[in-house]
Amino acid sequence: MIPWRVYYTDGATYPGSESNQPCDPWVAPIFGCQIIVERDADHGRRIVSGGDFYVWVVEEERWRACDQWGMIQYMAKPGPKRFMVGEMIASDGWNALMRRAMTDPDFPVKTGYSPYEAKGER
Image (cartoon, helix red, strand yellow):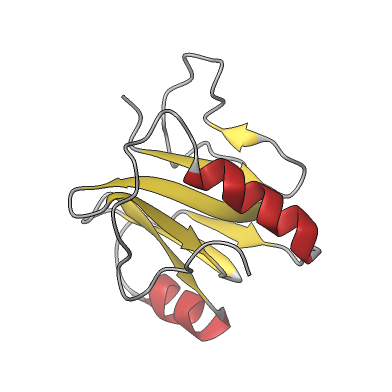
């Protein structure tokens, strides 16, 4: 059971759905991050998207999306750091990735949204 998966601009994922690759934030590719799907105890799956950057929060063992100021704040705090960089993408490409993230068979069905999530296609 994987705890999260990253969807990238070029359609690639980490970890890949067809591999036994471990889910390791310290080796996930850095550039072109679009959407992260995570397991969520309250809603089945959580969708993390819309960020300029995505930062790994060690204490929570999860990703968070942030802008430049959020990234500065994250980097100023003590502790290990891992981040990924978002990228501009056309709406149709982003919507296709969101459909994949929302229907990823490796994660439970989504039953609701947290207040900070994008709500599907735009």
